[in-house]
Length: 200
Image 1: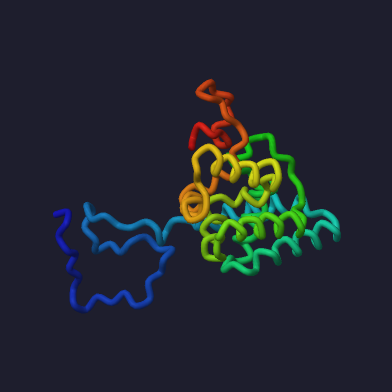
Image 2: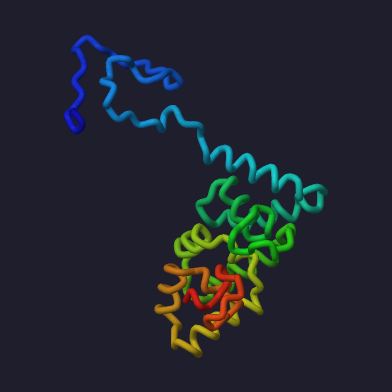
């Protein structure tokens, strides 16, 4: 029976389907039914949790102003308000991220910091479309140290592997996390795998 098309009586009409109701009784018991329509919206629940975490940190008018200014920097990209908040939250430790582990202190992002990182990434021949992809894959890049991580890692890529120009751009689109590597265990694990050059 599986794999055969389901045929309904000609007079059946499902114009006003109640998504909260169970599947119609005329389906055979062994027919596979997609449960997406009846499942709760998991992403909405996650966003509610994230927004609560962020709101707990933004306690003063000054914090709110700083947050809004940092969010405004991201208006160049085609992100929703929720996506901007999630990117900033992950980058600055307000939303838990496996990348940081427990070491990231929670902080309200500063306009200058976010803008400085984006300007530097643009200087690496990344367009706004490229940056959209990078931020989706690795939002934490905005919270990385510009001098100690981003610029240092770009120098390492050029000096050690000869990766620069178009090759660098392609690498960053494929694996932007390389910008935040700050540990090299050389095979003797230091339990900071998300930030280790051994992954490169």
